[in-house]
Image (tube, rainbow over all chains, first blue to last red; front, side, top):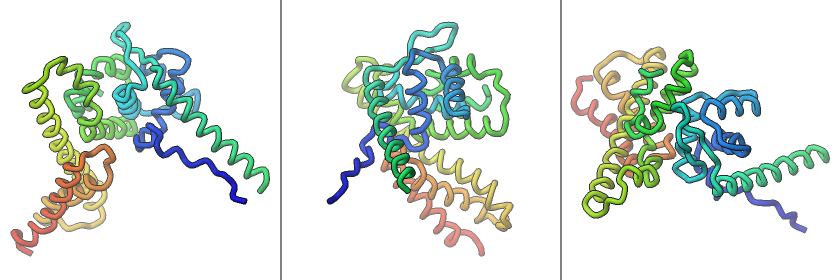
Length: 114
Length: 156
């Protein structure tokens, strides 16, 4: 009997972002608990992963997220614009995390039976 | 940092430069930071049409339609094409200086003038996901020209 394997989510809006796919996902996760400006996002990602994204990579990813309507830039406070997750951004993040969750579960399951 | 930001396209600087300098203006520019900013500038230049349009473009063009919209679309495509060539040649030149010359490539007019173009063409064609089809075609044309012109025009 064929075992059903979930297909990779190639139609994911993040899949087309190339080298920005990972920082984009991390930014979405960082913004999921509320608006943050660029520096706070960078520090949050460092706390999450142990690695700090470069400022060029960070703003390249922010621009792409903003263009796709997944985040929005709020009014500046002290010349620093906070960024906020949009409804569409939250939906995309949930879908991405669900895919990752399936990958992690499958990997751990296979390791356990190997 | 301020100096490196001059390499970013106008739309990026208009939108992000002030905020960026507020947050990162005092950041020590290590080699890694400089490379990251250079890559960011190149990405922004190569992808400017896909990033800047339509959402940012709508903000700058506002509710204008007709001729204004047409001109904006034309300029957007031109900017994208220029960025493709500039990015390709710039990357090709860096690649050439960093890898080809130390590798023992002789300093002839052919290598100095056309190898960067050749590398640039190849990189423009193959490595930038945000580039337009026209940009890729142009990169291909640069590559072919850079391979043919030295053989036709320059002494061996």
